[in-house]
Length: 586
Image (cartoon, rainbow, N blue to C red; front, side):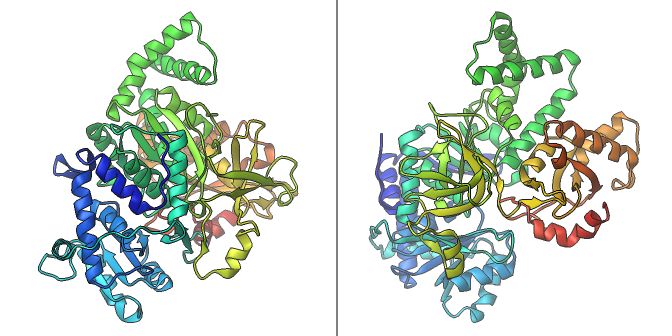
């Protein structure tokens, strides 16, 4: 049923009323999962809203939080909205200096810390942040007036009714990950975010018995809008993943029907299943490969013949069903966003019997701009513009007859970047359309295809243009390659920094009776990686192929600063550390 939410307070209150007795959030405690209902969640939101009000939080104020996904995160979020204040989430993995910058930039009145250590750090920053009046600790004892528990008690004793923000009121600032410098605050209104939720209700409505395992950060717009706000608006349940290392076993326990993830996670799934199948007898390997081929053709509209139908049924019963069972056995949908998903990986997951719906957007568009959905799906594309949104391709930027910069117009486009007038002028057009910085094209049916980032594009010495990210995604399909960065700006050809998958390499070496010493210089390892790169580059243009590479045993992670919290590559940081190694390849 179509809905028309005007603000996120209305969304939360409606769902908590209509789905009061249904499970909302699940949290793992020991070996069990404890669930709270929509009714119980509403009571927590009401109580914490009163607690924040007791600290003087009013319309127009800012409440910030440094925390991973947890029930208290969602409570603080909706409680803040109910006071007409803006909510600013940050990642626990961010650097202290980034927290301080964000708190100062948004002029937060209240900051919430997930752990005692984070709360202490925030308190030490207070003297340098004149707008920051209060620091709340989620794990402080109830005896502390600024603990989450104490504020719940204050709110229960002195309740405050929720305001109803206008669509133009600011819901929050989401600070982009900052691949090139300090984060930028994207100002999103209630109308921005609810326009996304309303559009999804029109094209893809989940049922109240649908369930996700939430591991994408709600501090990012994809996890926040598409999973938290959308699923809550439809009466679904969300189990909160405790640790990324536990993702697969938790999937088996929670038995979700929908999985929101980014390509990096789906790539790992692809690698893992292929590695397991490779260890099986030849007949099983053949059946697996054949089953994927038949399922892929079927997804494109072909009707399998009698023999192919029998083989597909056999592959599903013997192989695909066991893979689905590892993920709980109920997984129906895989929702991919944040970056383009490799067509090979999308086809593979689809073949397993898990329907892939890929979409596209940015934090600046709340985030959804296009999506595949039931009745309108093309593998390899990121779908059509969602209701209320239009997509145009500006080819003047690239000079290409087909590809150009993706321009997005609609109610989902941000108000602007906070305190960044020059950057606003660079991306906001006169009619409030947004220049995405992404390259792509529209097919005759209106499906959008992404071909890379304009800022990432570079020119080789021969004048040919290269967009590295799609090439990197292709090479990362190797089970022996965990990460890769391609480099070649103003150079004669492309080279690469390759991070091997150590676990897969050890398994390979054991079968070859090899001893792995210095991986970076081991000739057998280099020959293996070379063969993998060549095999996965067959469909690439000659000038796009990697001519030389260097091996790096340090993976790209958020901890070492080479990945953003949303797992995007910080090329500048990688080049600072390994630029000389890459240059030496020439």
